[in-house]
Length: 181
Image (cartoon, rainbow, N blue to C red; front, side, top):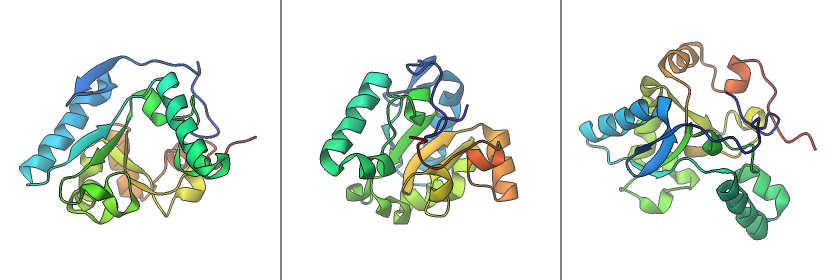
């Protein structure tokens, strides 16, 4: 399932089967790997936390409208998905944070924290990818979010890591970039 600015959910108000992981709802088939990622970080002495996960259509609409009110529509589109276009709505997207520099949660500096570096190095081992990076923003259409992970499964994540492909759009040959309208 690829959801992006060019490929909305169908139906637009899609709701997945969900399971609770550390107090957050995630899609059931991703739950074991999300929990394993958090456990492995802890075993390595890294205090990685879940900060956000599943958001239904109404919640995503509220989040997006908050960004529009704060930044205007054009800039909001760089940092937040419109409702029906969000990986969070699939239950496959999670946002992680850390304890070493909590001021970096949901900020670009997260990538420079102990937790952010651990995620960049180990996410693929648990079927996750850091979805939005500086290097792939033209393809994904989003500003870098080193805290946003997308579960793709261990096999696909390993293939992507081995081939150096960093986006679902490229590996699955689907359109990306900005909204069509």
